[in-house]
Image (cartoon, rainbow, N blue to C red; front, side, top):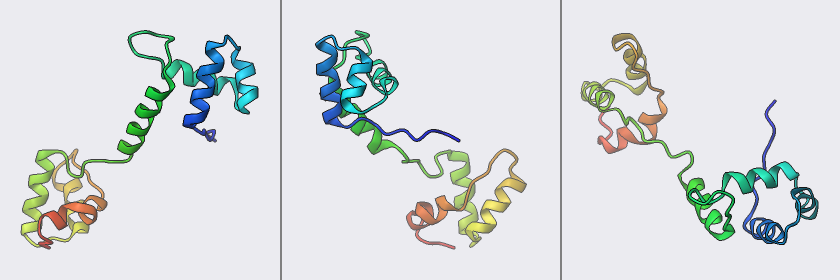
Amino acid sequence: MPREYQHLNAEEREKSNLFRTEGKPLREIGRILRRSDATIGRELKRNAAPLNKGYYLAHKVQIRYESRQSQAHRRLRLKNESIRSIVSEMLNEKRSPELIAGRLSLEYKGYTISQDPFINGFISKHGGIY
């Protein structure tokens, strides 16, 4: 069973950076913040400046973290041009999303797609053709 991981918040990042510059060991920082020393170490290592390893700027890390979070779980629907044209053609033939998803896997080996992309975007952009 995977462990549940809580990301550090902006305040914890600032404090861990401050304590680290004061020379406090990871265990002490973890104890003060009530976090695992492994979490603190992972945070400092993973988010160190790319060009200057070991150099950690908490405010820059927070900005990068928020940017990554805003992009998480955003997937392009039907991003493959081949699939998009096949699906578009099938929609013009008034086929249902369920039928299109099934047909793709049978007629076009290697192309599979769930029904969610249809419901969440493509049909509405395509004008609700089916």
